[in-house]
Image (tube, rainbow, N blue to C red; front, side, top):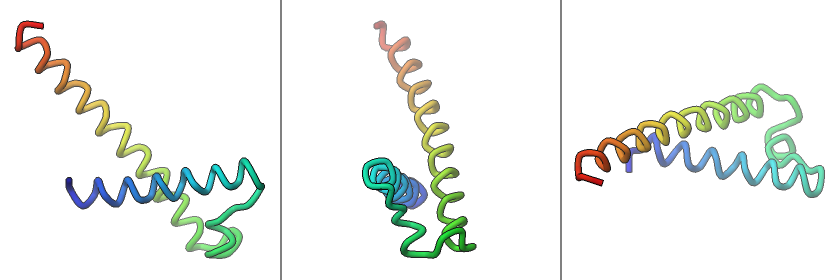
Length: 75
């Protein structure tokens, strides 16, 4: 696993947990740790969004490779 994949996974976990806490308890973990609308918390939010976009592109590429591998193996 590439380092960027690990970082993306960690950011997506942080983002998912934050959304879960916010949805369930109206508690923003990132804002409480880093400050409400602080520059650092905004950077974290942006990085989580970039990680999600990166993961979407990665899944599309994997899906394309799986489809290509499936058609060449006679399936």
